[in-house]
View (tube, rainbow, N blue to C red):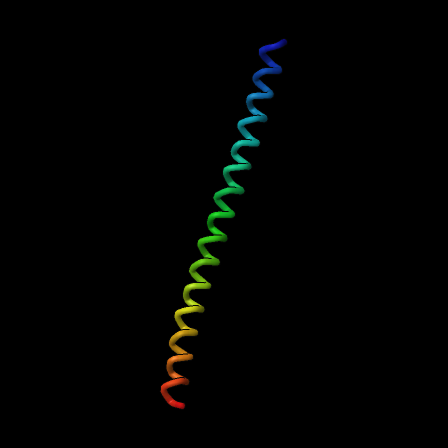
Length: 56
């Protein structure tokens, strides 16, 4: 009986580890997408500000 319970707990622990890893991967993807968006926004902001200063 002990082996059955140990097997179940090991299986549950592996599932929780997979869930934690998936959350970390999802968080990393969100951070990468946010970083790309912010860098593109800064890039186009510099271009627009430079254009308006040139025309003034």
